[in-house]
Image (cartoon, rainbow, N blue to C red):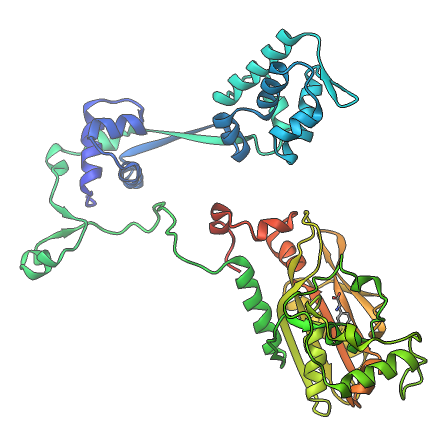
Length: 486
Ligand code: PHE
């Protein structure tokens, strides 16, 4: 007969004594075990030997979702708002906004309207407070102890993350006729060593000891160890793709001048994106000295088009504006300076770095985000090369469907917008193009330069399946722990 482990022996003895369907809790209690895994493993082993039969039945049940748990603790949103409104006669939407979070008032009022509260010209009113009270208390009861048979389940199903419908499997164990025939002496427990200690190894006892075998099929808790933030992991992956494609990485400062951030890129000095409301200009350093040689050549280009065929923007170019300190609004400010310092050497350079724009924070915007920037300069560099490079990049990232569409940037011609297909939709991820002569000529560049700048956070949202960009940076530990390893 096969060797049984101690817990298996213990469990089988129990079942020989009382022939019935045993639940997990009953087994734990009768055997005086506090570890479920021991019982499950013993049951599993015994059933493999054919001594025990495992009966599984599954039923649908309801449990609280993440929002539901919060509601069970702090009260349902409509209940909290109702308490406020019903205790404060004539309360208005404004009173409510002082008391509740902005993202709570809208949905909360929506829920209350469904219960008979009216909102007219900013003021709340209602007729039958008792009725609203009782509906809310029914909902509260539900969220305190949800039950699959409660008709309110249909209501809660329609609300986000309040409840989850789950299949629960319950198991019972019962002895088989083969199990009943195992003679009692076979079920005596032997000392079985589960943990190897220094003492055991130093003594000679290990020679005779009985070791508990490993069972790799058992469920175990997930070890939680340190790991990279998903954004950092994504940056590493992008970095390795560009390195693999023969690019070198450029790392540079985010404190820059308007001259390099904009003038060098032939962005006219009266361009709207340059305004205070779009760009963070610095008080310190307020001005950063630029070489007169650069200032003069940008002046010439902006006013008259320099030695190119262009006529420039006309008007008057102001070198003071060029020397204003700012937080870079795009990483193109760094690739252009790299080219200025290396105008005659073919290169493939990329950067993944932080940029700043005065944006209000919402689902898709942050004032601080990252761009994936790159340039290719070499004799014969062309649009086909640019597009195939970007396609290769996105393909390696796992997005094989890429398309480009015409776009406009003051510094490239032609200019492209790059889109990838995700869940059936085309999403814009960045801009690209070939630098205009007005950009390259003042720097003494002879070969064509392909350039692009893509949003990193946008790509992260695709990779991680997010619909709110803020999730990336709110340090939600539970979410962070459960992110897939990229
Ligand atoms: N700098 C552009 C942006 O911030 C992207 C871009 C880079 C476009 C290089 C063309 C060439 O959106």
